[in-house]
Image (cartoon, rainbow, N blue to C red; front, side):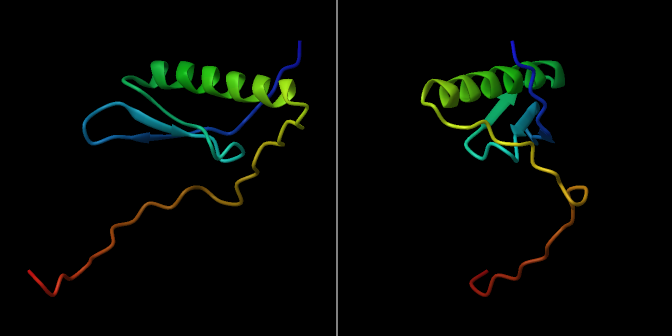
Length: 82
């Protein structure tokens, strides 16, 4: 059994729950209604993705080392048509 560690980002959604992305595995985007469920969904998605890579003879990606914390800011946009 191999144990893998990947950085996972949990983004709270306006309608509730969390969107989950895995920077090292760009194809993975999942969702959980609670943080606990989002973690479980992330584990399942990572496991299934990595097992598929191994089955296809592909290498497992290294974890993405984020250089900084994610940045959160508000952007103001003016609409000419409004």
